Image 1: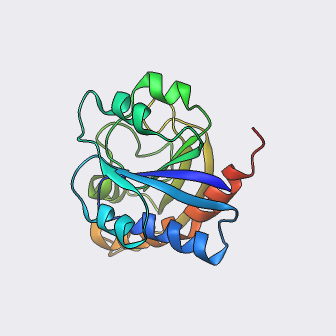
Image 2: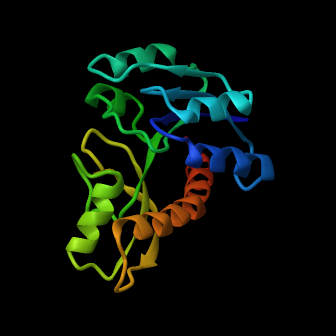
Length: 189
């Protein structure tokens, strides 16, 4: 059984989707062994309600060092699911190929420092893009620069705003995130 550690910063809807997909078998031979948040958030309650060990490591300069100390030795994959802190270069290099993130745009467009949540969707609309989507990628020391694992696209309508686009992209996240996790867990070590 593969052990997944999920890092969160918010409500944990993608965490819940991962849990549901493990329960249904869409993600096979895996379990979420630990959920770690960088701030108080509803996602910690979701973990608790699903009987998953969870903890809070306050965000800040020492986050990656503290995370390294608390990660179980048998961690197979670290999944960033709505996680907003930046992991250190040392941490990402040590765990290279074992950390994935989901980003609410079609990378390499609209990624990088400061590009998260509504800011991404507003930027996509203001740029006049015809489509957007979500990207699951490996995490490296460069923000949103890792190898793309999977993308899903949505069409942008003429009357689209950041909120409606966010909802469409979130649905794509639900679709591709479990597939990407399953794909990465099957990569031979």
